[in-house]
Amino acid sequence: MLLDTQTNLLTDQKVNPFFNTESKYIYEEYLQKAIQSVSGFLDNPQFYSGELPEKLRSKEQLIKADPTKMLSIDDTLAQIKELYLDHAISFHHPDYVAHLNCPVLLPALIGDLIASSVNTAVETWDQSTSATLIEQEMIRWTCSEIGLPSISDGVFTSGGTQSNFMALLMARDHHAFKHYGLNLKENGWSDVVSKFRFFCSEKAHFSIKKNAALLGMGYDSVISIATDDRMKMKPEALVQAIEKEKQSGNIPIAVVATAGTTDFGSFDPLTTIAKVAKEYDIWFHVDGAYGGGYIVTETHKHLLNGIADADSVTIDFHKTMFQPVCSSAFLVRDTKHFKYVSYYADYLNPLEHRDEECPNLIEKSIQTTRRFDALKLWFTLKMTGAKTIGSFLEKVHYLALDLYHSIKDDPYFEIAHKPELSTLVFRYKASGIKEDTIHDTINLYIKNTLFKSGQASVASTKLHGNIYLKFTLLNPKSTIDDVLNIIKMIKETASNYKNYN
Ligand SMILES: *Cc1c(COP(=O)(O)O)cnc(C)c1O
Image 1 (cartoon, rainbow, N blue to C red):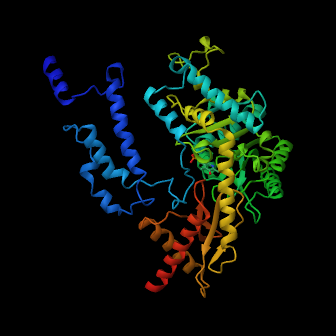
Image 2: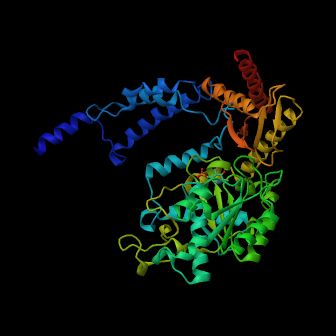
Image 3: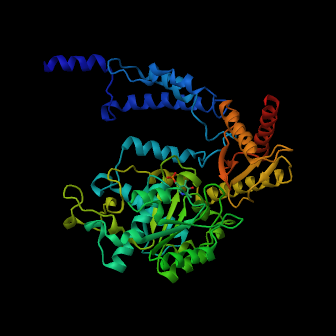
């Protein structure tokens, strides 16, 4: 019986499928072939083939994994080309201006490849050794760029959503401990927590509300603060809201300021908000998922003035440091606050074996098994350098500004804001039409038609209940001509709409 199984294995698997000493040359051969496939992806002429969803769904034979039939590397790569690489969305393409997806840097890809192959898990020292030191150094570097004190610390996370989750959790548990002597981590819910309130601007990322709900506190624990005409939180409205909540018996515990809102790239007035947080003795979190990266620029870092006063910070390297997903960090002003998430497991990191020389990063994370995502940033800082990244970020801001100046007097467009970062929100306005609902329909038609045809990917969002288009410019290699070409496509598409309706 045993022999039979082994024979089957040998015939089915002609090659050793594991990454190990014996497969060294197969690994090299596979990677070379895989690299060629991926290079082929770079030859795709459009950002998207425009393949219809039903056509993609009809490739079910390719999508399905047949457990009885094993394919060669060549056949599998051929399948993935037909199924995915020919139709994947190219974030590096100048006609892709939809979401906060950056083109990625080659050094970062090398870091990711190494991290995936070696497969280090950074939760304990005995699984990671110097990888732990590299992650800690990337955290230390980021904290120091931001200007946090030497007792600050941080951990890599899966993204801004998870970092914001950690911020709200820490703010809540810290407040409960400091003011009510409650240990929520050990003892769970207490009624007073139902009165806890977070404050953020109405333009803050949805993950603030979503995380409050995940924490069992509900959307209603998040109070939205009005923004001014530049989409920045109004500090006087913040103070009024805090006072109002207090009067109605609720307990303000934290304010979240956004450094670079997702839609408008606007910065809340961090210095003023920091003062308000201090006055009311509440947690000050800065969500810099998008704008945090601008700390490495010379020309724009002033936008982040006040961030050094934060109790905690979210920063997404996979947005504005040109890293592949995931690469993100949660930073905290005082390392001792990680006690709100730490757990000592007998089999992994028993408290009695705690050793400062050989730290276990699991004590700072809400994940257990965790990728070595810091390595790609390390490669990037070594090979590309923070200064160059800063110049890329300056470039995409100036590109957004150029676009703004190019279309601001165009009667066909209504612009929502002057870009502070690298997004531009605007809408097409067909002449002679007053009804917003018709403008909504035309703008959605433009967005959908451009995407379906593979011509361009533009995002949409809502402002005052109306549909607007959004360009998110994160590609330093794009030129104003590239971007104006999309504007031209928008106008052509809109005029086709008129012709058909
Ligand atoms: C993108 C974004 C997030 C969420 O980050 P993910 O990495 O997508 O989880 C949070 N806050 C802001 C301001 C963002 O722009």
